[in-house]
Length: 401
Image (cartoon, rainbow, N blue to C red):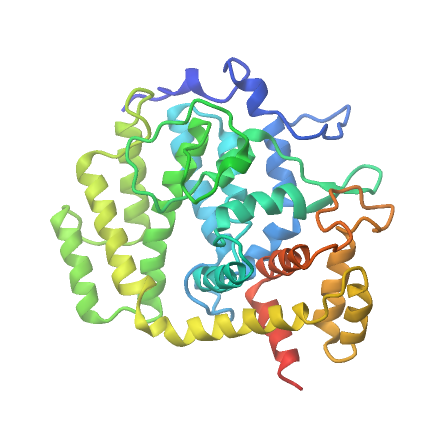
């Protein structure tokens, strides 16, 4: 293996696209004694965001909010950061950019994992919208929803760099590409209409994309075994895959280590971020195993219905009070019956309305609630940001009546 093969194409001051990489929509406030790079600032802004904090109570695959040993969305993000930074460091890519993309890549995941996305897609389609996909929602979260206080105590949007925003929306790990190269053009990110439509604009984003897949496959198997979700005859199939590729076992550390090393051995600016053919086929087989015996398992059916019922109930309860700018008054009345849900949602809305308090300097994405479509989007934004635990608690409030 040869280190630093990607040093000349790394996102740094010598890269011809550097100014575009670090560009922001607005001018981020500065500190005279700040020692951080633009990407380090992005990393810490994500780290301090409320959306990141909530990941610790969001489902990765298995809904088990009281089991400390089952992977949460936050833990998955940390796995992706670890894998991608190990690869990026060896290849000579920008660690700060890699770390920031990895940290922010799943901020837009709905509660209850994939099942939450399914129900939000149904709601969107009922309102004439396209499907809900978390990569785009992650970009919406960091661009328009998440707020941080500046040095004057004013709440503003995160305003992250283009390279980080691009890496987040283009990180889809479900596309089985091998030999990933970054795209050449710095497009308007609103051009993304479907998940995985475009590759990342940077090599660092390409690394996070493949690291995402490596990180979740092994850990999902480990959790399935820990919860006795996989039956013994299924484990025989997994062991056969292991033997086929010369491995004595198939667990998180083995999968991560082998794929990390293989990527470092086979990647180059000419060939892209890639595995050799053997390991690429192995990755596909493990992924297919996970889909057949974990993700589409009928044991999830009751959970799927439960997650859908919770999200649907919250949505319909909030939707019924829409009345333009009088919606806030209707929510105040609703709070007599559902004090937690109605009051919390009302407080959330106020931050993004044109008539919001002076301390909010962010983009007013909900205007004056002029249309029902705007209000529907506000509900979807709010629900998508919920943790499993919070969604369950608000649902429990609803069923008291």
